Image (cartoon, rainbow, N blue to C red; front, top):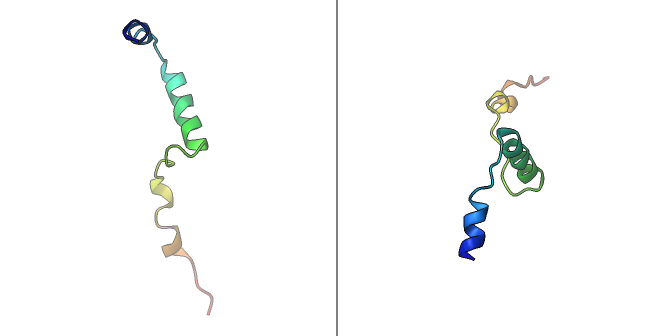
Length: 50
């Protein structure tokens, strides 16, 4: 196990691969989606017709 762990430490992951893994985890529901600050107050600005 120690030798296997030593070999895995040398595996490098590019920024693109890291981003793809993050997207995959989100799609699978393993991580919550990132908060989108543009859509926080969507319910406060609705016009109510009287």
